[in-house]
Image (cartoon, rainbow, N blue to C red):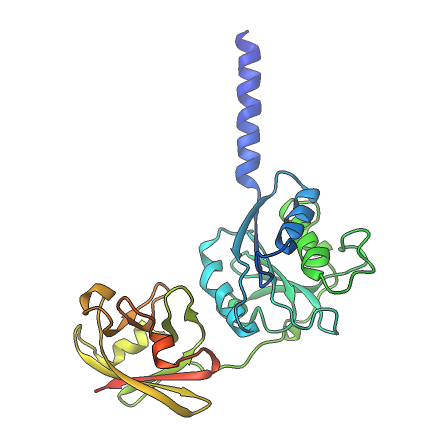
Length: 298
């Protein structure tokens, strides 16, 4: 009886260890949740392995490939090594753009269209290896006549096979040179005299806060003091859209309701918000590489 109980315990421990060792599969698409597209991708993944660990980054429309690139940048560094990301913001589906697999130097794997979606994670984490997904061996069987759902038939299927250890990264397809990765050009943050400038990559979608790519370390070069007012200007394609005077504060409740503030967001970049309000909507501010922001002393 003791021997049998010991065997059962060892089997349970082995099962728990195997579950712990599995690589998460993270899905990021712009498919939305109004129909069955995301469920179809998950069904394909579970058909590869019922033990797969699937999580969702988001499935709402990011507005652009660059916005999608920033959402990946926002989330991926918090996931453990060996996580597999299937990222499908793909307006060119079925066209000539390549389906690719990228492994970063930090140990994450991304499967995505080669359209600039991996610009920011590749820049931050570095590229260890880049491969073209070979559709002759890494495509959902029976999907050869489907040309507009690569998220399900190529990226989701191959990502699940990687996460479930059915294939190794080297089996995805032939190697590509690292400079084959398509990237989206954008303006880097910089200090210009007593101002710092950068772009507005995305908006904080839930609240309308204006996020920037200006790191706190760069803003600190202005020697700001908490409570000090700064002038914030917003431009679209170098045309002034508006400006605001806002104090530098730690958090929203340190200013009155509907009052603006400058603060450090969760990525340690500078951001602008209204306490209990939607700054972007009320000030006509958008996001993308064409939107720039300037923060300087009042």
